[in-house]
Image (cartoon, protein in one colour):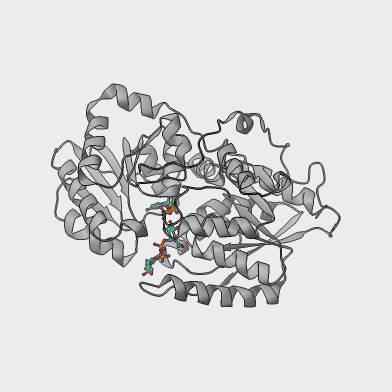
Length: 401
Ligand code: UD1
Ligand code: UDP
């Protein structure tokens, strides 16, 4: 790529469709908009509607191309077909120099695939996460593996994620350990200090988020029952900003409404969610992003899943993979609430997901490879890799099985 020197700015298309993609690509969009070296072209697929729109201000890029693919209870096959088709047209129309996708969603997979069909190189942000179980999380684990076959730049958040990619045969020269951009965004938002904490009582504060497809149905109803029993203690306030997915709502609302210790609210905007996270005592979640954010704020996270592609926090002690059974969930939550030593151990374990400079590393690398880098054109000193380099490696995969 360094031979194909192009004139600045590099036209970088950021393809995003869901809440976490907007949050994690926002710092990249902002940095590119501030740099003379890049022209960020934002495409929102609309895989999510309300939950994406409430995040778009974070990007601070006024113009964007919008697709509108969301349908109630969309099937993965229909969504995938509509996205490849729609994105192909956008790419043929705008011909960017590079397409940037994030994570493991259907939008990310189809963004990479459509770019491949148009012979446009792909940069993958948050590359290399693996559980080692092809259908868990479903379908995200497979999406990640497939994007890993397509991408030219693999921006891995941790050394372990980078190790997965090289073990799969991706050349080391295409893998870059950067930290996770979610930390960059969280630090940026908290520095603004304008979010509102949505807890309302002085009780112990438990923040909940649940949405995973593989748990929908009976497993998620069981989670709801466990949470209701937790609230029966009477000394806790449970707050659930509820995902918009109808399948999630059907499973959880019957169990969680009508209890004085549980408040179910609509999804929070990012400023308020991060302020609420900063104010809580404990997090119970199946979310990828929340698993990364909680340790940065010293909040113990109980991960309500059977696998995680983010074992770094579990091994470091900031998170516990508790599984999905009601007994395991209740036991783990009560233990944390009742054992101050265990609580302090988790709350002080630290954050393994980055130092807030992932974006800098990503755009410095891209600028260099496109031959447009200039010493201070990025408006920031070169990233310090020493912290990232010290993060530990770990086993290949991680699950409760
Ligand atoms: C998707 C991602 C998952 C990510 C999650 C983030 C895939 C395969 N999965 O989950 O990795 O963790 O988003 O939240 O891409 N809906 C609305 N309004 C919204 C958003 C969703 O009404 O703003 C409803 C729609 O009925 C939609 C359903 O929720 O059909 C599920 O949305 P979808 O994007 O399919 O979510 P997941 O695939 O579960
Ligand atoms: N989040 C938010 N408002 C909410 C719930 C979550 O802004 O009401 C943020 C959270 O801070 C995290 C991201 O959404 O950065 C996680 O999104 P989600 O759990 O939907 O997806 P995942 O990370 O599991 O892919």
